Length: 208
Image 1: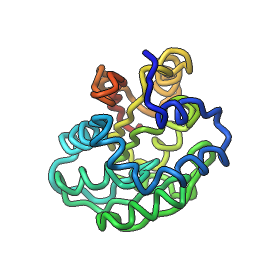
Image 2: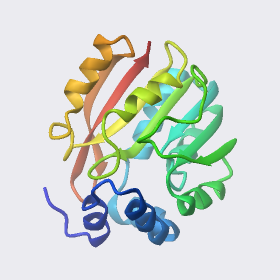
Image 3: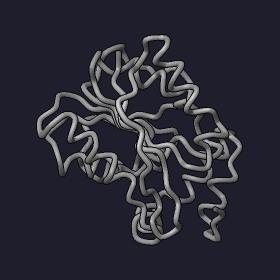
Image 4: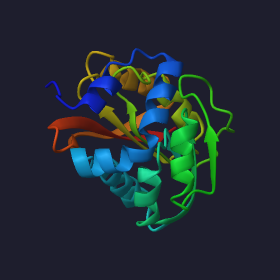
């Protein structure tokens, strides 16, 4: 399915160049929430937060929102659980918007295509929404999310339908299992941008 939405066209045309990604989200940060949630029916943040909350319960220790953007997922998590939520993102402009939500313990700039400056086994849960899509971050980055989660902690990751097969996510997740990095608990088809008709795979993993 192709979109006529110029914002999504620009986002999905990215080729992984980190500066182009920063430029896009610097331009978009101020209107991102209104454009995506209101304009596109972006329900993935709420659905992913609900999935993580079901696994962790109302009280958690520390949760990482990887690729937190403007803080939509953090806001949804704060409505469902009491936790220390940390966020990382490539875009300083998006992080500024996230800070205004008032739900994060700390926020930091980070490139998810590289090793994270975070210790092993640091989080009781990890969530990543809107990151694994065209021209952004590939499946190898999920390894780092599993590394920073404590053994047995849930990871909830959305993968856009456009890249699920073409970028090799099924094979990579199976390799993670084979290597003892994480276990696949569930993979289900889910809504993503409802008004645009896009869907995603909502992946529930367990750090090993």
